[in-house]
Length: 91
Image (cartoon, rainbow, N blue to C red; front, side, top):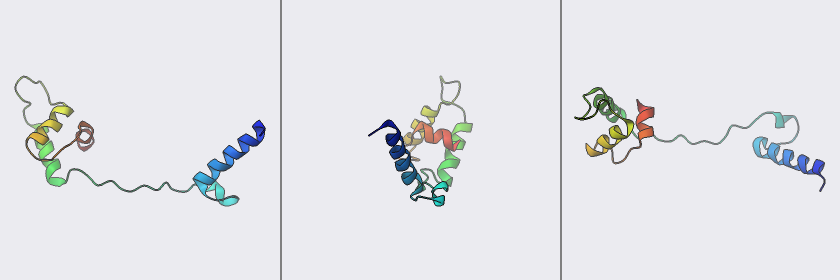
């Protein structure tokens, strides 16, 4: 296989993978198949998180950290588990 034909096959595979067709229709990109992920926190849990964040930080801390907020949510049994990134996105 020559380098030129190798490039053509790579481009062709990419086009088929992203567009699924050949010809003028190949210029229109297909939307990626995504499934919506369910939210971990409902409205009540979000309100409790915001209330916790707006309250006084624990003794010895100047402010709340995302990790500490996540740990506190689990400790208060608001959620079973939660990551600091979910806390960040919620706030």
